[in-house]
Image (cartoon, rainbow over all chains, first blue to last red; front, side):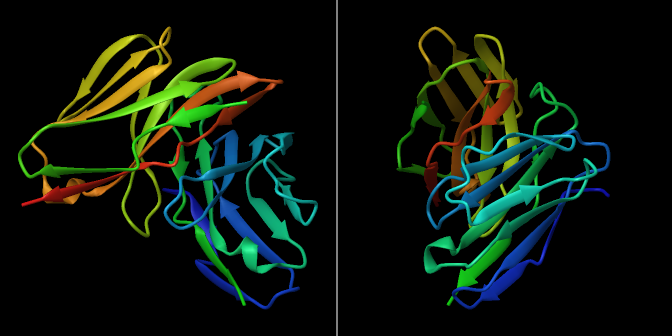
Length: 115
Length: 112
């Protein structure tokens, strides 16, 4: 597609519910990052994929968070047993290659509210 | 670990020039990104500096000093639409992976 697409745009979850957030990167993009952004803060790194390989998951806050990119294109961020502190905007960004010279394009994000 | 420092807020007047500074400490440094983020929107790419020096792109310029761990974003001829957060993000390669870590952002308010 023309840009990075994220769905759903908004998600309200009851505490304890599992959620799945989807990221469709630009076609052919190899590198993919997930971020969590709280209000008034910069994006916080969660995890990084190069194709289907998850090379870095050091930013995932707990074992309730899980990300996958099984075919090297679409990626899903899953949060199990959601808690109120998980409320944030979740951003996905992709790039043609890992070197940085192509820049990273962000999706519009998923705003997750846990009630 | 990584440490990124940029001012929290800045205010400037329409038509003026403003410089947003960023200092960083990181391992495996490749280059540095600047992104603009309007409230409620996704970050959009402004610049990527790999080499030392100033890169100019229209009203926006970005400077990098790798030895000093320092960068700045220069915005000229400020317009009201430039009111946004500006995010400094060093890009690194370490432990067989790329890392793009963002600072907390500088919220710029442009006044008439």
